[in-house]
Image 1 (cartoon, rainbow, N blue to C red):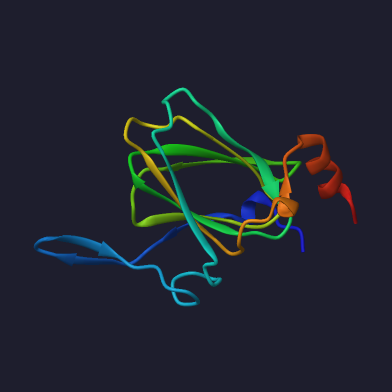
Image 2 (image 1 turned 180 degrees about the horizontal axis):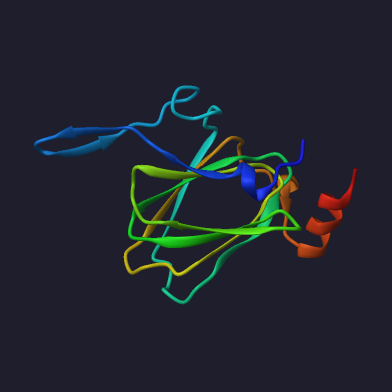
Length: 138
């Protein structure tokens, strides 16, 4: 199945409020629609740097601004949609087959990524022309 940018959305995660701070929990198949196979995070990204520039054939992700803020531009080959992440209880759900670019990292930002698959270079589409060819296949 090929997803479109409209299939990607910001998901509000539950917050447990306490006097000593807040806790947000993400659980496989409860708050997340897939089982997490890999977790990683980006940090110390220079404010003028851009990241991403790829898509995945199969992998899905939830992306959280654990600290600070940044912008995701998602592209399905026909439409683009921009998402601004700046709160740790909101996750961007990126479906498979969507090109992503990241920019506008604030100072001290941490981009937490929860992935549906373990790392595999074979799952990456790193060339935009190859991405468009993939999207246009029936």
